[in-house]
Length: 249
Image (cartoon, rainbow, N blue to C red):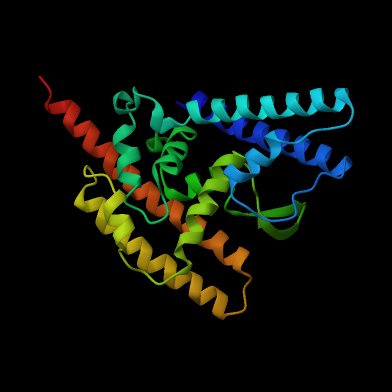
């Protein structure tokens, strides 16, 4: 599953590069779409573009075809489209993490696939350090100077974690969207932790911004604490899977 996640991230990066090639060529040839429209109309507009030089037309069609192929690859590597997902040994943990606000299926799968089994971390601080969310320091001899977070680890994983943390800017509530999309297999224990996390993190964000902290700094703090709640849910899911394996004949 980790390889699938990384293949999808690579396809997403390639898609951005392919789109930029198309936009750069249109800019060089003064073919600019003035009005802002939806993606479907924009694709139709791209297909109708013509150039005076045959070489330019061939190059432009090559860029468009490359973009279509990359986007097809991006769609086919979406974890939700893979049928063996329920057979994955960590599938239960993916479901339990979706109890948290801001954590959908794709984010949950990535958060589980990259670190692997959360039981390898004996406490939440180790997981936070693995994700690069803990403060670092400059040290030389007796001189020790603190600095910002270390930012080590997987960049795609950090990006998705920050994306989930932005959901805690608003007041805590269990909305209809969360109830509708939350998997039925989520346990009551995971729901209780998710509600506790929502109350804590929403309050934490408002408290930090009220003190004059930048929103990016506040979100980093929220993401760090969100990691701790994820570890708690993962630990409970691990104990549940171990107990089930013991009672099997």
